[in-house]
Image (cartoon, rainbow, N blue to C red):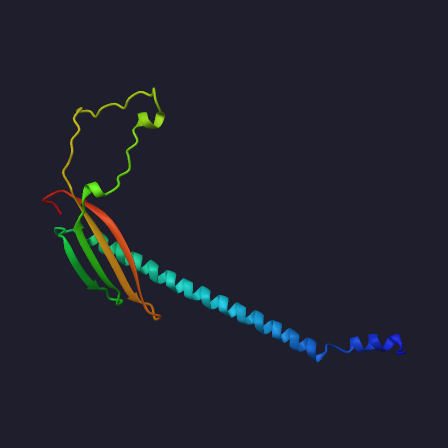
Amino acid sequence: MRPAGNATARRARGFTLIEIVAALVLFAIALGIFMQMTGNSLRAARQAQHYSQAALHAQSILDAAGHGETLREGVSTGRLDDGTEWTLRVAKADVDSIAMPVPQTPASIAGPGAPAPLPAASGVREEVPVDLYRLDLTIRWDDGRGRREAAFSTLRAIQPGGT
């Protein structure tokens, strides 16, 4: 039989080689997972930055379309200073094919029995003719990992004969 004092003295000397190897393996696995998560986060942030930049480019292009010149049906393309390419398709939209929200009058909001809304000061409802155009914009860029693109659409109402 061994004396009890030897077991306590042996534990006090330090860690065994197996314990050190196991700790290093766990540390290496945790470090690998952390590095992968950091890389994925950086990639996602860079991709979000590219899409935000594409949205800003799209806003600029769509805002400029039809201002200072007559909006015409057709396709136009271009390239921005940073290499971003764009394609704008303009087509006359069919008003009947567009789902319009039902306007809420004060009486329909208040419910039955509510007083009817007051008529306009002149009592005449005037309708202004407009041409409705659909603008479809595609933005394309290269993010270093391949070609990316984003699509944007809007409607523009223009009085006939106007810009």
